Amino acid sequence: MTTTARPLTRIQQEKREIILEAALDVFSANGFRGSTIDEVADSAGMSKPNLLYYFRSKEDIHATLMERLLHTWLAPLLEFDDADDPMTEIGSYIRRKLEMARDFPRESRLFANEILQGAPRIMGMLEGELKELVDEKARIIENWMRAGKIAKADPYHLIFAIWATTQHYADFDVQVRAVLGPGRDGEGRFEDAARFLEQLFLGCLKV
Amino acid sequence: MTTTARPLTRIQQEKREIILEAALDVFSANGFRGSTIDEVADSAGMSKPNLLYYFRSKEDIHATLMERLLHTWLAPLLEFDDADDPMTEIGSYIRRKLEMARDFPRESRLFANEILQGAPRIMGMLEGELKELVDEKARIIENWMRAGKIAKADPYHLIFAIWATTQHYADFDVQVRAVLGPGRDGEGRFEDAARFLEQLFLGCLKV
DNA sequence: CATTTTTTTGACCGATTGGACAAACGTTAG
DNA sequence: CTAACGTTTGTCCAATCGGTCAAAAAAATG
Image (tube, rainbow over all chains, first blue to last red; front, side, top):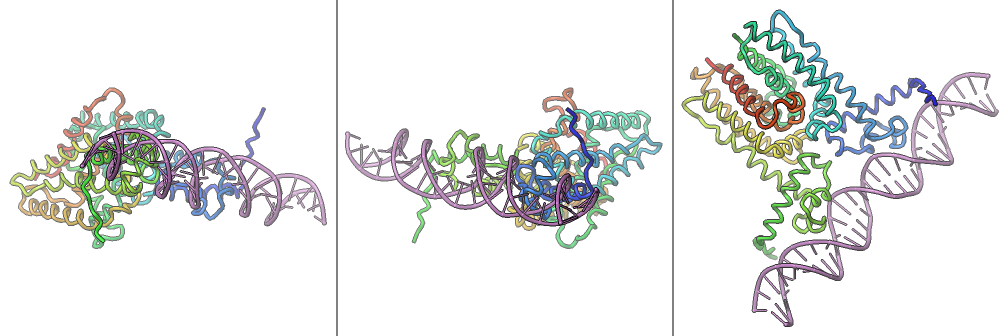
């Protein structure tokens, strides 16, 4: 029995995109369980049955969203390469991660929500793909340390610290804004953050 | 018309405690909107109407939980004091925050959930109490810098970085465990984290 | 003991949930 | 025009939601 996998029409492609965009808004703000497909449908400007014509279920939307997210999310780490100058490499990794927090805060929050809830849907990816990738990058960092190019430190916790500090500006955005007050509006805080984080990480890794 | 505010009986005190304990489990794992009072009642080992005998509503439980949380959560920052030796003071603040991530991960996740969802219930506290407290501590740090006791850096982003890195071990626990793998089980990762974070922050603040 | 007060629960309510379905609509190819 | 196909929605469903209520059970009080 061959299930004819007909290609998506142009309209299907477009509508699916609109739905995913709306779902990213809703899911990232309320978490999966805290969101309703009515809300997503409203936000996408269509009726609930119409939305369910393009996605079989709420889970299906979330799964599609999550699959894309992981692609985007791993990209900066994939680019992290064995370079001549570790400081530039680490510095640009920090900058890339910070830019993602600035430009894709909803994606960051969607990911944070999933992890906070115990990562039920992406545990396999965390223990597989992600772990292998981090292991590989940790080896690169260790080699730099052994070669005396940067100070010795636990490479895994170094990576965790970079993740935590950069994603903080997306996930805890309202707190950051509340504490900084109205004086430091706009995107200025990201420039300050970039300066500080480079000083923090590169400063402590200097030999 | 005087509403007689009779004191809580022993049983009321105990049952409310049991409910709050169960609610902390449920709310921290699923967020407020993603949780149900049936779930909390089940987890507390009582029927839903019985739970609603002790708390007027779902909101009421969450509000009570949140009020207590903020007390606990600000404690380490309140202790942060103008000391002779900034390095010891900052170091022990990091250690206290890390201990809280280890010993009260549910509280950390409850707070993270609230912030992620835009902090609708605690925005006032963020812009009021918290901001004032952080302003005060930032002034202390700036004085240390002016006195040449530690290297110059943005004190606000320094505090953000300490929050982010320490709370990461509670909020992103499953990711940390997945990446570190089964080799580093138990609480060992917290000791590694403590060592790394002290090196990171104190290293970069050395004059 | 009897009585009063506190605690517990089964049954129920209207609203909302994720989802099914058939009918209606729009578009396009012959 | 019409038949075929893709799209949209009104209506409906069982399950679950937060919450009420009266009545039963248990504890405290006299």
